Amino acid sequence: MSSRRVQPWTEKYRPRVIDEVIGNPDAKKAFIAWLNKWLAGRPEKKAALLYGPPGCGKTSLVHAAASQLGLELIEANASDVRTSEALKRRVLRAVTEGSLLGVRGKVILLDEVDGISPQDTGGLETILEIIQASRHPVVLTANDPWDPRLRDLRNVCELIEFKRLGLREVSSALSEICRKEGVECDPAVIRELASNSEGDLRAAINDLQSIALGKRKVTLEDLEVLGYRAKQESMFEIVRNVLVAKRPEAARLVLSIPSLDYEMLMQWLNENIPYQYSPSPVAIADAYDALSKADVTLSRIKRKQAWTLLPYALDMMTVGVAGARERPPFKFVKYSFPQKLRLLSTSKEVREERNRIAKAVATVCHVSTRKALLEMLPYIKVIYENNPLKGRLILEGLGVSEEDFCKAFRIEVKPEIRSRPSRRRRS
Image 1: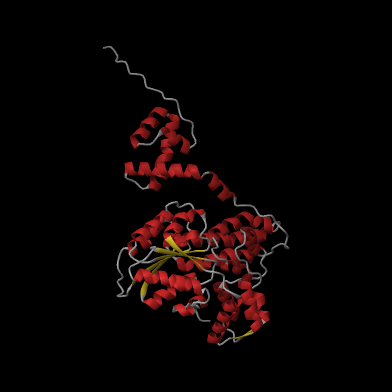
Image 2 (image 1 turned 120 degrees about the horizontal axis):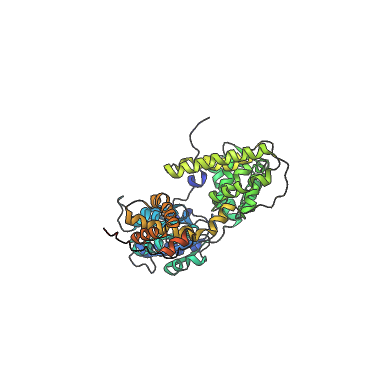
């Protein structure tokens, strides 16, 4: 078997010119009009926000327009870049410089801005900073532009709505791909895939590839491999689809859900495996073994930036968990919200205060924030609890408020005790 990686059909058949983008003619016309104003140097608004359901052509249109108009495309997924600092490193410099490729200019694409981490309060402010500083058109995409957090972004953007693709449009695209791949596909299969996608062309193409790859003919029987397509479901249903999957393909199918947070999925699986697989200790052990390997791989990915390993981690947390031996018969289980996430939520304010104090200490002592948090603050806490006077002097020297320190470490503020002046012994 060849080890060469198969190219996803969503990339292989991505539109290269604007006319190849399927559906939404009004949105395409509005976007090109806005982009032409930019190229002419007369933009009314420096950014455009393309919004609509997943798989309706938002990102594809930007790629096609950049290709057709000879623009260099600078792309970043706001939900993957995660933090404001990462956004600045990845994008902010690019928006103020000219292109090195000898093309007409650049277009900056920030995908899925509604998926940026809510914990990073500076992320959206950084996007606003990018728009203000940019010498090039900035395009944002979002599934839900009416999130209250995006209000300031909406005010500075040209809003362009994309609607869900129709059944005929999706069916036509699938039929064309089958023709180019030399696959004879039953029209009933095409209709079923188009209907099941609910207007998400990307999902429909992924489903078609999963059942047609390596075949010359596709029939209705091949649809059984897809099972039940989980769309934007609650995490309860997603976890259940993994834990009770009868076939590996059914467990892996949850990975096709738009905007799936796989780290959140791991936490939910970790919490609920014992409930679903009880009373079989073998099944529980196998599931946790697979989940632990996924956790180790994700840690390595983040530490080494080895994102090519991500498919292995995702397979371990879905197919690996679902493949546990001696699974008990199906039973309905009411899943629990992860206790770890609940504890982190309740302690968020305290952790933020500790980090703020650690940054202040790190600045004074010329060490990293991590070193201050792990190696200095715990000792200061012990000193303060056992000798409030010395602890208070240390905090004053570091420029840290005693009340804030005690609140962050959940200790009682000690009453101020002043040392008595020493008496000189008479000679």
